[in-house]
Every structure is written in C-alpha cells, then in structure tokens.
Image: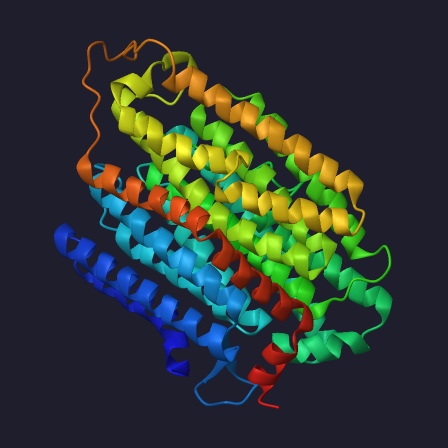
Length: 495
C-alpha cells in the first residue's frame, strides 16, 4: 500500500512525457491527461482512507533509510489536500479541453499542466525540505510556461513580475534550507522536528520567520501579495483557475506543515505575528476587491483575503483553530476554482469580464447565474454553505482563546466579501440583458464541455456543504495530528 505514495508524483511525470511525444495528436494528448489525473484522484482517495484508518504512511524511495534518503509521507492533512487538489486539476483539465485557444498551436499545455500536477503532489507528500524545494521549482517552472501561453504584451509584463518575484523567493528558500542544514545537520522534516528543539531559541525564531516570509510569497500573504492581482487575471482561464484555487493553497499547506512540525509557539512569538499578518491580509485583500470593476480582478483580490482566514487558524495554534484552517483551505480550493471557471464562461459568452459592460446574465443564461451564485454565497460565508461552516469554526476557535481583534477582523472581512459578491451579481447578472458593445446581437454561447466541467466542480462545493460534518471531523483529526506530531515522526523514522 505504501507504494501508492509514489503514484501521484510518478504518473503525471510519465504522462507529461507521453503528452510531449504526441504533441501533434491533440486527442491523444487529452486522453493521456484525463486518464492520468483520473487515476491520481482514485489513488488519493485510497490514500486518504488508509491514513484515516491506520495513521500516517511513509515510503523511503530507493530503500535508503530516513533521514538520509528521499521520504514520501502522507498523513490526514496531506491526503485530504491531495484528494481535493487531484479532483480540481482533473475538472479544470476538462474545462481546458472544451475551451478553444488554451494551447495556441504549441502542444505544450498538456505536458506543462501534468508537470504542474506532479509538482503539487510532491509538495504535499515530500518528507524533507530539499525535495520540497524541488517540488516548488517543478510547480513554478510549469507555471511560467502556462501563464504566458499565447502571451500578449500585458501577459508578458505580468508574467515577468510573477517570474522574478518567485525566483527571488526560490533563492531565499534554498538559502534557508542551507542554513537549517548547517544548524541541525538534517533536512528531513521528521528528524528536524526533534533537532530544532536543540537550536537556540533566537535562531529557532529566526528560522520560523524566515520560512514564513519565503512561503508567504507563494501563499500571497500581506505584504507579499502584490504580484498576484496583476499576474493571475491575464492568463488563460483554466490556468488562472488552477493557480487561484490551488497554488496559493499549496503555499499555505507548506506554511502550516513547517510551522507546526518544526516550531512551537512560545509566548508572544510567531503566533501573535501570524495573527496580525492574517488580520491585515483579510482586510487589505477584501478592500482591494471592492475597488475593482472586473470580475477576475475582484476574485483575484479575494484570493488574498481568504488566505488571511487560513493563516488566522494557524496563528491560534490550537486544535480547533487548525481544524478550521484545514477545512477552510479544502473549501477554498474548490470554491475559488469554480468561481474562476464561471468567470471564464462569462468572458467566453459575453466577450468581457468588465462589470461596466455586463448586465442581465442571469436572464440570458440562467444556468450561469446558478453556477455563480452557489460558490459566491459559500465564499461570502452565508449559511448553510460550506464557507459559513469554515468561518464559524475559525470564529469559535478565536473566541475560545479570547483573540477578539482577529475575530472582529474576520467578521468585517466576511461582510465586505458579501458586499463585493453582491457587486458582481448586481453588475453582471442582474438587470436588463445587454450584449457587449463590440458584439451586438451576439448569441450567448456556453460550450457543453466547459459548462459540464464547471457544473461538476460547483457540485463538489455543494457536496462539501452537504458533507460538512464528516469533512470537518476529518479536518479535526488532521489538526490533532499536526499538533501532536508523534505519529508522523514515528512513521517516517521507523521508531
């Protein structure tokens, strides 16, 4: 069963090679991508069932024992993330297949997309810092290709900002890993969990802050988020959707994993700083969203705001807070991705995403109104949707520890999120239908494959709401694992 750990990484790599070999045969490329990612989703579900029943599982690649070899490890948190990530990349690929122009004659979209999936899986399953760096670089190298496909001048400009900033963050990451190795003699996460306690307190706090900054760039926390609202909206819709729903959440996953496994909050140290950063991230992101007049840019700023809620749960360093954070991350993966896919359908049908040029979409395409409304209400935290469950869990965890300022910030951000979603609804979906000025009388076209993929992902968001209790219970058990750490360390080091 432990051999399953390698499949979510190995299958997309092999699939990328096959897709590159048949780059001139698009139908075969698409078939390879769908089969590979569908198989990965099945493997992810099997892994989740295994770790939930029996605890963490680890695999030493090549047979070299930890902490000297390459370790792959899955616990409840990483397995949950892998399930939601694999379902998301599969459905977004379906949307991309239905959208013309995603791969403008180059044949590289599918190989790059599969390598991105491999990088995500490796980031979630790796058990050491160096291979975490490798995973991040695989994701970034693939994203550099995807974000500039069919590049316009604006895409190139925004893409360069994305590339330069992430290259800087990657340089800082490898330097940080070198410093950690110099101080402890290991990069294995399970081994570091014990050795980090032997490091002087000041140096340990410095490492905690350094990793928070490095991965904070990937996660787009305040004040390191400025690259995101410009880079994401200019990319093709499937690329924007998977970046928005998944890549920043992988950054949050890494922050939670590293901070809980390697660093124990002491007094007013990292936890208080994390809460301050979380509160500012929530409010700055949602205020930026309110100021926009384009659907993609509104949603892009909301990525930043919602990251604040996830960091809020981490900053509490309690089981309830981390359970809320885990549930929130899982919910946001599917909610945010589905909203960007809906935005892609709007742009495809109406020719624009500008609120000033849209009106009456709910009458022209009622199904599109429903597909927007369901995840939008979840994003805003309206009951009984899953977003409400996630925010309620975080608020209750904050109340339990008397963290009133961050709770107040989260409630204010939630109200402002509802306001901005209402702005999209009234601007684009309500009112009298009016075709875009440059497309008078154009028929509102919704291709079946794109619509089906979007509807399927929206159905997943509804399923999360319906199954909120079991999903939250799983998140709670994952949070307990994160704080106790014993099972993870024991499984990896075979003690």
